[in-house]
Amino acid sequence: MAIFLSILKAILVLGTMGAVFGALLAVAANFFSVKQDKRLPLVQEALPGVNCGGCGYTGCAAYAKAIVNDGAKTNLCPVGGVKVAKAVAEIMGVEAENVEKKRAVVMCSGNNSVASTKYEYLGADDCASVSKLGGGIMECQYGCVGLGSCVKKCPVNAIELKDNLAVVDCNKCIGCGICVDACPKHLIKLVPFDSATRVACSSKDKGADVRQVCEIGCIGCGICAKNCPSDAIEVSDNLAKINPEKCTGCGICEEKCPKKVIVKK
Image (cartoon, rainbow, N blue to C red; front, side, top):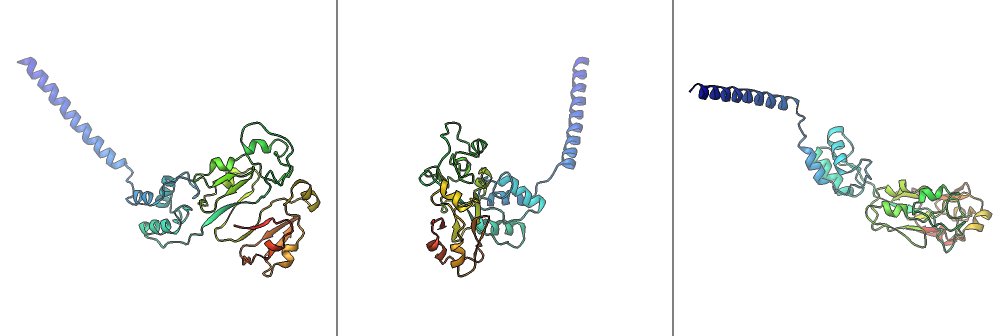
């Protein structure tokens, strides 16, 4: 009987201690817990979930936290565009901000058919590594390396290599900008989606030097600038540059360019 009472007493003591400790843990958990904002899962659900990083954050979850916890802008998602920006703004109870849709363009036309190469490369397909070997494969120091580092990075397969030149499909491009960072030559730019005309070249060499390495590179002749009715083109550093805010897309410069390096879309 004494043994039974001892066991019962021990059980009661342990049970009481367990209940007390459990209650203390519950109080502590409630006291130290970080309550999640109810808007967070709603914002995360409204985002597309592509995790492209185009918003400047590591992914959609990180962007959602930045919106809810840090007051980040609601219009930074290039994939979702206006629709997502409005949905997120509504969840956050703020006014929806304007979203400018952008697309990537490659400021080079020097594929293997028109541009000369310095050497044959048989190593790893990495543009940054090859660029360190004498400036790259192409004779033009400003030309596309053509090994597809941007192609590998694109989350929506909007870029392909055509004759060793990166080409962007504007209908697939989401304007995330990942390819911009992937290009060691800084040839890829984000432009307003509806911008019509561009100079598909980045060479700053003199015209005579350009002619020696590329058949269609900009030679800085200035014919396009002289014929532009809206004064949207200027030539600096031997390269024609088009101001998208002034350009009307009339196509005169494209027609007049002797090297046919001015293109639409």
